[in-house]
Length: 310
Image 1 (tube, helix red, strand yellow):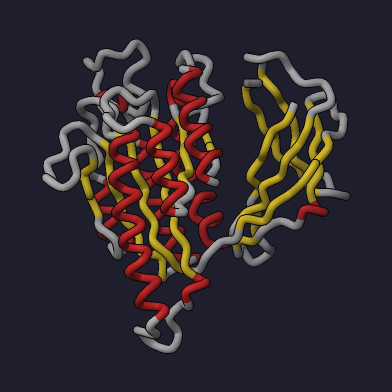
Image 2 (cartoon, rainbow, N blue to C red; image 1 turned 180 degrees about the vertical axis):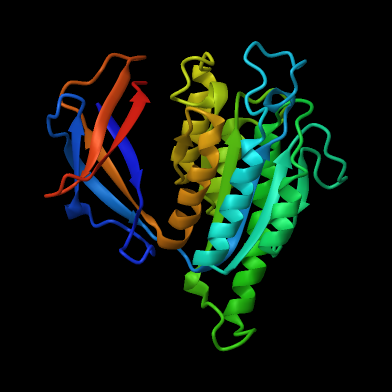
């Protein structure tokens, strides 16, 4: 009956903030209170190194792909999501060094066997937006190999940027070392099909690098997409990658929800979020849907949530 929920917020001026634990309440689908056992504030950062790593496998758009539920994003909502994340991150954290990459089995860079760099670190939002239009859909799904590669790139860029801040390079308004962060967001619609690296190896690499991997599932990798025919293994793998590296697993019921989720991710990167651990008094059996509400205490404001009991 235990679950974790990542909760972000904005103040009256639209500035992203961490909602205080005492302001939050949780109810189950019958209106009964759910115990909040603990909360942990995950801080945001005004600057850092950010990678959005997007699924470039054939299942995203290719109607001839060997997949019963393909394509999962034929209208290319992931393109708009990448643009939205870049735009909103620029607004709330203009010193973030943004980059856009794609995992694919058709990568051409000899140094990156499973990753296409569409916009390298430090790209302007306009560059990221233009690069997003180049997101493709072809080949297999090397999630673990690509994420493994990207962690190395991200760690290198972050350490160089932190070193520059430590040395006091740049103008007097440059962010200090403790104001820098890292962000790695992986969007995928299914299980890994092509990697040499294992999920266990990837988790160890991320832990050693101190990089939290946030995962976003759509199509069969989404916890709320029953009509597509969810892949429990894909969902569990993305959940595990996020949980064991200190990130969060998010999902959309439809690809057209990706841009709004990207907006939330940008604001959480800047303003942080509250991660609460709740326990349901009467846990649902494995495989059943769990529904509830997250409420703002002493108000009528609430937002619904749903997930499948593991």
